[in-house]
Length: 199
Image (tube, rainbow, N blue to C red; front, side, top):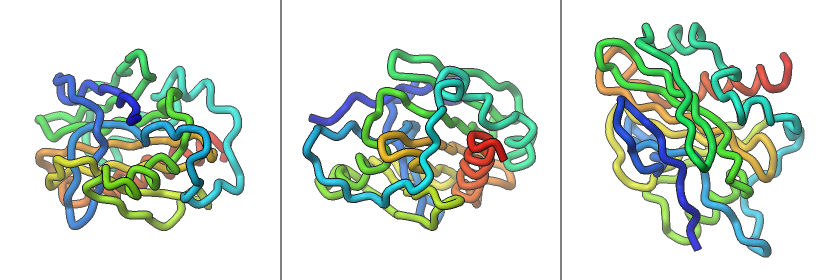
């Protein structure tokens, strides 16, 4: 059974979570990570060699993993920063000025499959885009989509443990960063991992 997906407030609109991948400037709607994997499913994703064990503070306060100033350097001035809190977990949402769009990131604690859930969903044909990417500091990365791909959007999941993923969602509608949303997603994830590892 496919898991319920985390809902996120993006640009003042509640959007059903369905992360979109990124390829040739495409991606889609908002959403964090893979569906949960029932016991006994095969492990298809790369294993996380150096898991980040202590993530509780970042799950409860997702904005603590990446500062607003770091996000502004990547995507432009911010109108506001806030936490979208749902029954399935929390995302930090950075909203850019002038309706440029938003960036969101966090660790959905209800997910227990890490990025392996994406590999399983890809195998089952649930994804419209699935692109394993070069690791970030040794942590496996996937760009993916569940439909709704569009220019300026990108969704990234990086495995920080075999059973847990950090997710970045980029939804841009204008501005200089619109042409490279996946680059922004990767840099946000890199900053978060450095912070969580205490670098």
